[in-house]
Structures are given as C-alpha cells and as structure tokens.
Amino acid sequence: MSNDYYKRTEWKRIVADAAKGIHGDSPLTGDASIIWADERISELEAKLAEREWISVEDRLPDTCGMFLVLYGYGETAILFLNSDKKWCMGNSFYPGITHWQRLPPQPKEK
Image (tube, rainbow, N blue to C red):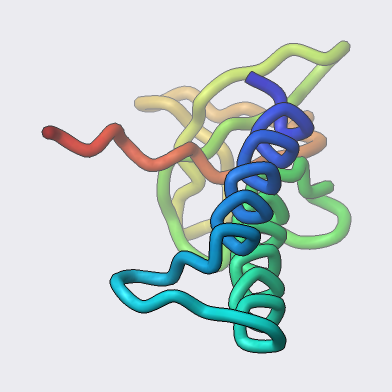
C-alpha cells in the first residue's frame, strides 16, 4: 500500500472525526475541533516522514539495526547496519547502498 493511499485514507478519517466533533468521550466544537484535527494531521505527517527513502549521502541511521535498503538498479533488501556503519547480513558486507528507511512496526496482536 502506498504512502499516498495511507495519507488519503488517514486524512479522511481525521476529517470525518473532526467533523463529528469526536475526541475520546467528549465532543469538540469550533476551534477546539480544528486544533485537534490539526494535531492529528501533524502526527500523520511525522509518521509518513519516517517512511520516506533517505539518501545515505544525507545521513545514516542513528542506531544499529535492520533497515530496508535500496541499491544497484532499484533493488531492495533488508540489511543490518552495524556499529562501524557498514551494511551487512551475517558475514557478508554490502557496498553500494544508496538509500534506506526504517522497517514498519510489527503488527499488534489482538
């Protein structure tokens, strides 16, 4: 599912909730509803920013861990960034990584 689809779907929900004046158990009206909707939109934009491809020329992740990476001619892989700031999987190192992004959170159990 694309970020644009997620953004449109989530914004529709936010606007619908704001239009209904729903916030928890207490209804909001007027400016309070607009402020609440604006805060939710800001939260959504922050989430989407985390899902954007980041060039390795701009920056590398702050911490070690698993990341989705882009290399070569648009190929993707999930690799580990080690403490030496090298991309690897097991004992193999992968040069030529051009972009990276965080992995999505794991699904929540119901």
